[in-house]
Image (tube, rainbow, N blue to C red):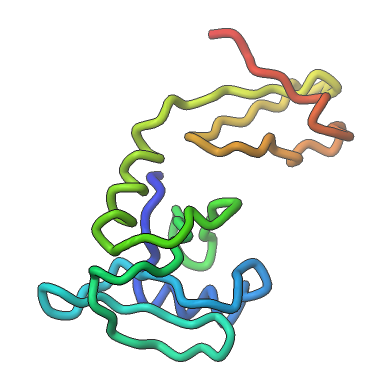
Amino acid sequence: MNWRLPTKDELNWLYQNKKELFKPLAYWSSSENFYNNAWSQYFDNGYRFNYNKINNILVRPIRGILPDLEIYEEDLGFMTWDNAMEACEKLNASKREKWECASCPQSCRFSNSGSRVKPFCCPYSFSAVDWHKREE
């Protein structure tokens, strides 16, 4: 699945269930309201608002569907709505990296698309050193 901006309903779900992963600031959603506005939400108080797309607010891509959303490991920064949509497209266009765990007898593997953090999903993996890029 591709990285994208959350819808306004997904953004609200993230606020209600995962707000500790976000800064107490406003984030863009993908949900538009008229041609020049899109919905946003503050993560300090949950206030949802319709904001002009030319304003710069925080962006945090997701992928998947509720309730199994995968949240990108960090904010992409402050940007306009159009730039946020483009940033998500660039994440999806970046080269996929293949990783495998050197410590795992089950040969655990993990793929990411542009993520800068190695996974720690394997119970045999004790640090990032255990993970190495797999040759294709």
